[in-house]
Amino acid sequence: MSPDGTYNTGIGIVMSPMDTPRRAQYALAGMPPSQPLTITFEPTSTSITGGSGSMTVNNFQSNNPSTDPSGNATLYFGATLTTTGSSISANYDGDISIIIDF
Image (cartoon, rainbow, N blue to C red; front, side, top):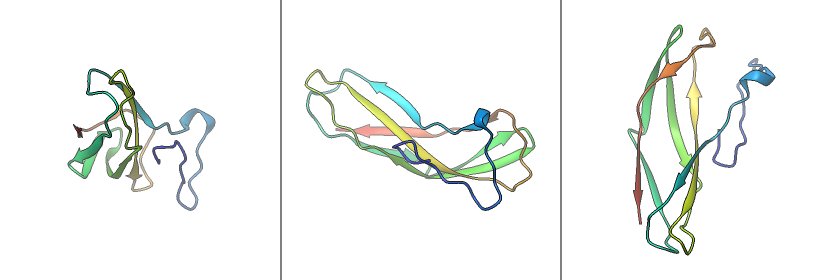
């Protein structure tokens, strides 16, 4: 999943309309006006667990937003999900820190 909302599936993977991936979206406020933002993700790779075990999430990418004259911005990001192929549809949990520098 890229920050612009496009995605690719691996060979033989079929997504149902109910399982369409979505990019993450955060509204940011209260920052200096008209400033470029540098987005860093830590860790750069993480495991999520639930359902039938674990999967890996890595290759985090953001839209590298800038704040508007009011100090607001919208952050979009995506990542790569790697599965064993036997994962079931379920809730999976994991942690990632998003660091915003301006």
